[in-house]
View 1: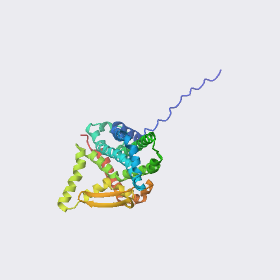
View 2: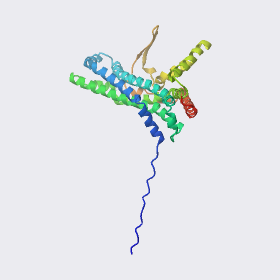
View 3: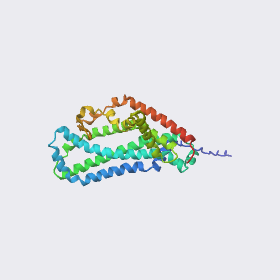
View 4: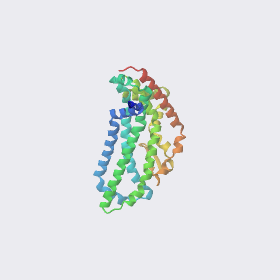
Length: 317
């Protein structure tokens, strides 16, 4: 009599890790589609505007031949820099509104009660929102900018070839591979420099009961006006202004390329030329050794810690 065969019950595979941080990032991108659409629309508008004026491109290339070599390079690079400025500016504005809405909206619609019932900590939630603002949105802006510039370059090549003009002069003036590296460096530098702004906006989003945009603007504006009236100084205003726009002269060595600077009643006027090689423009050691950079990162850490504490104890609106 044969022995009865043993029944083997297969054991279930261990459950996959839930990866709460990854899914928190996915949730933010699902719920805030504007962080994708706004830069894409800006890039599309720039491309449409360029297409409408593409017929004048051959005349513009012939006019460049009358300029000095440095001026030719500055004009061509300037067109691509303007494209980057448009897309990045739209992405930055969208990013600011995202930060102000990120923690406020879940308290306003009381969805925070549902999210707190899940095994996702306040630290994970707030840090995921910071990563969207500091990593995802700048990466989207960079990709859209480079894609738009590449399409501009392709359209320019087609138009020039169709008109009998060569494209070698345009490519030599642009040096696009180096320009891509500089754009990547500029994105990283701008993100690190703007970190305290992201932290401050997330803090306001976690604290304000209503109208976070007004609180974010009126508090520093009121403090700056009070400082001006009481102490006749503008230290706070200058600090905010430097944090918003002064990352460029810190991250890039622009002084050797300013050929002329003149002051008038209408403001400052710069006669500026770009270097022949865009990588000569970058100054990463100067940027990383800048004390305001590290002070800003420390402030960002304090703001984020406060936002985490507020999310933990703040009641729904």
